[in-house]
Image 1 (tube, helix red, strand yellow):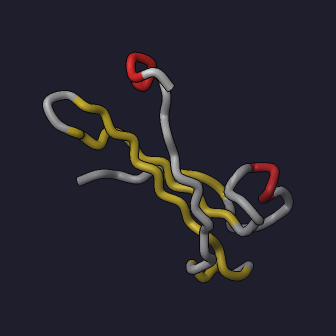
Image 2: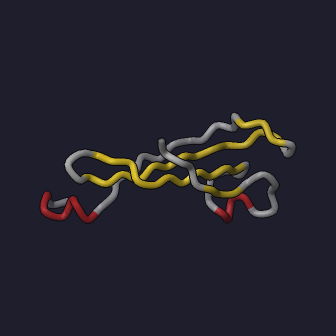
Amino acid sequence: MPPEKRGQYLLQERVDFVPVIDTPAGKAKIEVRIMYIWLDEMTAVNTIVRMGRGAQMGVDHNKNLEWVGGSAGFLT
């Protein structure tokens, strides 16, 4: 990718989630994403928290499962 276009892309590393949260429906996986912006320094501005029990975190992988979904977290 040309250096002048690098600011137009977001690179994410794929990770495997491990079921570690006990729920009444069984172990669940959790994902916490933090969005940063760069002003004078890197600053956290938003979070997404998702919990799933399927093969992946996406909605299609968690259909008809209990104790899955998304929320927001607070930064202090």
